[in-house]
Length: 511
Image 1 (cartoon, rainbow, N blue to C red):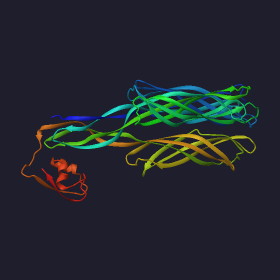
Image 2 (cartoon, one colour; image 1 turned 90 degrees about the vertical axis):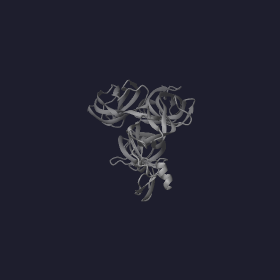
Image 3 (cartoon, helix red, strand yellow; image 1 turned 60 degrees about the vertical axis):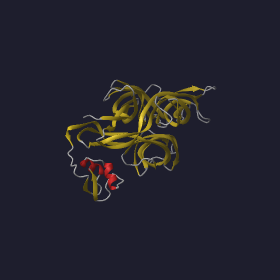
Image 4 (tube, rainbow, N blue to C red; image 1 turned 90 degrees about the horizontal axis):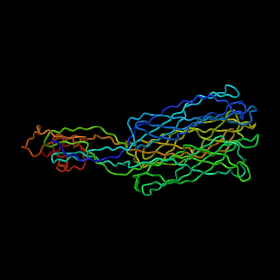
């Protein structure tokens, strides 16, 4: 005999890829004619950016470019020079299934870089960076919520689920002509550019998301004067952008992320002919996922009071987005220099950051590392470079507990301020920390139920009650199943409120 099964659907995000693919970098660079010879290399780094991401069938395609930038001292040892080399890359990754509509989270990660001058005008560079991606598709998982049958006893579990109802990803640009501040010398060339995006607010309007934020960009540039040192200048540009996000409503839990995927800038003359304008385009990538709250009832065990029952089931684990946490903290650090004395700081920036998070006792703790790179002058006004890898830890309250939860944490390094302290510097770094907190549900999901009518339950109808001596902690559901009776009637007959025996004692089992 087959039973009618009522089912409920859960809209879940299924991860079909989460990994990295390494891209080698092998270059032999000859300095352009306008660059002076190399006395000593100060800093060499790879700066990769992912420009586009797409899926065709079961293949993920990521394309972008990278720049290798080298800072060095000229033959006199008193002037910072730079050279760079730019190239493109493409990465094709095999997915475990085809995906027509997927959410792609992708970012590059520098692995290592080795750089040496084989002559005063040639550089040998070897390194690698990884292209990391996580691909999520909107899947549906059906669960049995009820078995129709007067002879069936069911054990049910109700779960609060945030269903993934929609997501969107969109590229857009913020364009602005930026002017150097008063007192800053005109620019001859841009040596290095940093940028990050800050999400300030978002609002749901008719199936769309209005996102507001700021794009923060920083330039290190070389002045027009012959013996000038590089100058740093920072700008903040407000922006708003409408994102098409089908399925999103006012009561959705929305996970919105912003990242910078590229910066282009050209130096322009002002009205007097001085080079004080930066014609800037900052390319941003916005990603949003919308979750709708609901309750799902799952039958995780059942039996028939009249027949032997055949139950097909499988173990299922669902990671449900329970909470979004975001905060900004300022981390103070002291960077000392043993062999040099800092007389002036030219620039401080970040190139690497990692973070993880865990929950315990209603608090989430972020732990991680980030780097600070410093370009400075010593007491003889000679440029030098040093960097430090710093540890940090930050704890704040959250609504989730530590039981059956997991965290996916992210970090973005914002503004960095500093002051010279003795032989080193004291820095204050803005750390923007976010985390998605998932509640993990593991349960036995019933897929099919049938009764064997040729194997009826043998009953002794001579007794209306049976006496059973239960142990403390014994589950009433298991007792009722053994006697093929109802757990509800056992509880009513014995005046028990809970589902577990609190103390050892006698039970009356209605037959």
